[in-house]
Amino acid sequence: DQQVKQNSPSLSVQEGRISILNCDYTNSMFDYFLWYKKYPAEGPTFLISISSIKDKNEDGRFTVFLNKSAKHLSLHIVPSQPGDSAVYFCAARPARNSGGSNYKLTFGKGTLLTVNP
Amino acid sequence: KAGVTQTPRYLIKTRGQQVTLSCSPISGHRSVSWYQQTPGQGLQFLFEYFSETQRNKGNFPGRFSGRQFSNSRSEMNVSTLELGDSALYLCASSLRGALATEAFFGQGTRLTVV
Image 1 (spheres, one colour):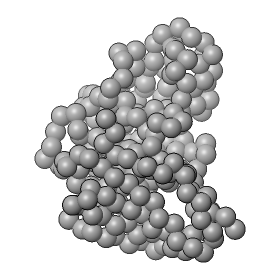
Image 2: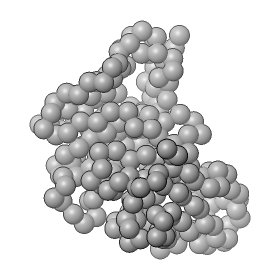
Image 3: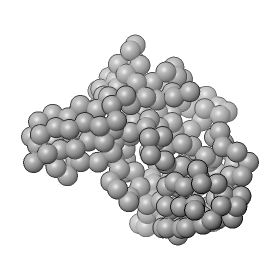
């Protein structure tokens, strides 16, 4: 049961253009969402996050949009740079008052972004 | 401030053996979570330890176990290794576990079972 889905295994964009990575979730208990970036042979590094009370969060070239009704979020990178080439993971966690086995970060399978010079 | 340290970085084992992986979290972090990453499967949650207690567990067989020490360092053990256990094992530390706004990952241990 894939509760966090990244349906595009890969994405290729030109340097300077916009990269849009998408993520869908099914668990309505999720209320906090994160994006991680992972280079080969390294652990994932935190990129940006968004709480369910917001619909947008921006940090420099990175913006995350959340559409709660559609259970969909997206990460926009503008402008894309070759150094952004990595695997991007979407993750979600439940509300703080939930408990039991849902109390963890659930990750999608990742999207490999390639930014071509 | 030192990051999350995982040892060893690489490991080759044969089927049927057992293996122990180690994770030292960021100083002051009390939560350590373990994940298995395989091609096409993303990060699969194994378990989380907080203050020496297992607080949560994923859907992995009992061959996968862990523990956490009083200094928050954690170990993960896999017994009776199978070929399918070949993966990158990642640990992440955070101040409060799932309550944290982010978790910090180590570089991982690449386990190859032959």
